[in-house]
Every structure is written in structure tokens, then in C-alpha cells.
Length: 228
Image (cartoon, rainbow, N blue to C red; front, side):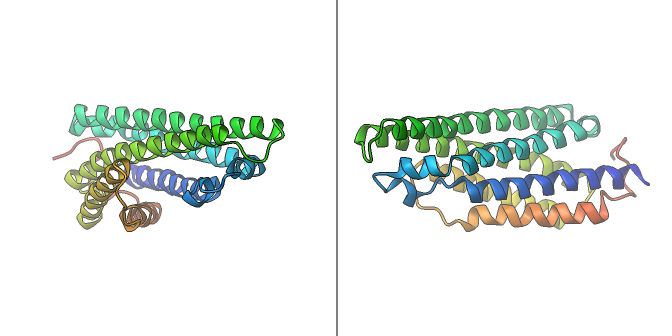
């Protein structure tokens, strides 16, 4: 089978794995605004610690998919632009590092909830305050991660646009999606209310692109070893 088709299918599988694992992890993580409004929310964290740890693991594995895509495309991307190839690698590593930082905050929250339960008290303002700080640290890392992912997606889609490995409307959609995610992430960091469609569009786009690549691969008429 053509190298383009094979490579595209692998990228599609990695992207679909990323969005599925990330989606499941986000759904079962359980860190919501309504959770921390309760004075005894640390009890809920402790009760759901297993699923929360599972969410952490799923998010880490999902992010590894992004690093794998950058590594897979590096030898082809550098033929178009070495700087672009290095940026894709650098952004994927940066994203992984930020996700690790956020997950450390979440794991610290789980450890705090265990200490809270072991202390044998039902409510404690100091514990709650520390817990809320851990949740805010996680979400700060989360939105920083989204902003870095948007830059990664921009480089990835620009590469696809200039090489015409997929229909250009898909590349343009990706560039628009990346811009919306970046805007939404930074509005969230500055505590503005953000329409979740800014982020949901990202999931829809990744799924559509993944399925396209899985079934079609990259355009077999384009040369992955030489671009014109």
C-alpha cells in the first residue's frame, strides 16, 4: 500500500485514540464546579479516587498519542521545513509536560482527600481551601495545555494545508478550530465565561479528521519524501 495511505491511517488511529481516551478521562475525572461548592467535597473526591486516578492515566496515555504523531511525521515534515518539524516535536513535549503538572495537582488532591478522611472530620475549611487550590491548579494547567495543543494543531494543519495531503477544507477547518481553542483557553484562564462550543468543535473536528485518515489516509498522489 502507498506510504501516504499507511502513514495517514496510522496518524488517524493515533488521533482517534487521543480523542477517545481524552474524552473518557474528562468524563470520569469528576472535577466540576458543583463538586467544590460542597463543604465536604473532599469526601466525594476520596470516594471517587479510583476513577479519578483512572482518568489521570487515560489523559497521560492520550497525550502520548500526540507525541507519537509528531515523532511519526518528523522525517516527512522536516523535508518541508525543519523548523516546523522541530516546533511540532517541541509543542507535543511541552503539552505532555503541562498535562503531567496538572495531573500531579489532581493526584495531590486525592492524597489530600485521604488525609481529610483519616483525620475523621466531616468538614474543615483549611482542608477545603487546600483542595480548591489543587482543583484550580489542575484547571490552570488544563487550559494552558489546551492553548499549547491549539498551537500544535495549527502547525499540524498548516503542514497538511501546504502539502495537500488531505482536502484543504479539512486543513482550514483545523486552523479555525485551533484559533477557537486558543481563544477559549485564554478567556478561561482570565476567568471569563466561555461557550463550551469553542472546545466541543475541537472534539468534532478531531473525530472527523481521524475517520477521514483511517479510511482514506494521506493523498497517495502526493510524495511524502519530496514536496513541491
